[in-house]
Image 1 (tube, rainbow, N blue to C red):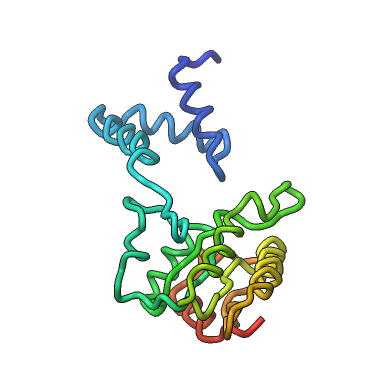
Image 2: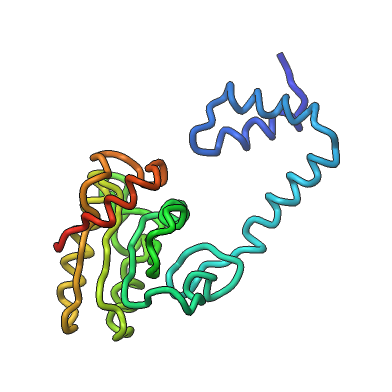
Length: 202
């Protein structure tokens, strides 16, 4: 059956999103067909502004409205500790715990040879340079996901960070609480807090 081009185009666009299959894309498209035009306009406007009204913090590489971001600008944060995560969603997860008061560094991915993602494709060099330049950083907490890719990234970062000639730089890894193969963004606040408390030297 031939469908209108506008419907087909939107279905194709939805299909490009992660986790959205053809049937879900069709359901979403036909649902939006019955939504009032003003809501569609608001939805379209929000999508249009997504990249225009956000920026990457040059300090931590988190997504924010300003540069530096609100976390890096917060004078009450512990500037001696940096928590390294894979994605901005991981920052949100840790912030929900209300227990971590340090700074972050967002890699925007993990090392994955199978997908041709090496250290240069994510923000690893930015972290190394940041640690070299900022004498106030005393601890790096590596909080990559407990997956093969996350572990490979953690090993690489540990090796590179240990090359830095810096007195008493402590490198730790999240402790118990995060099951192997899990994504941090899906972990609850208690689990993340336990992982932070149980971090270990690497």
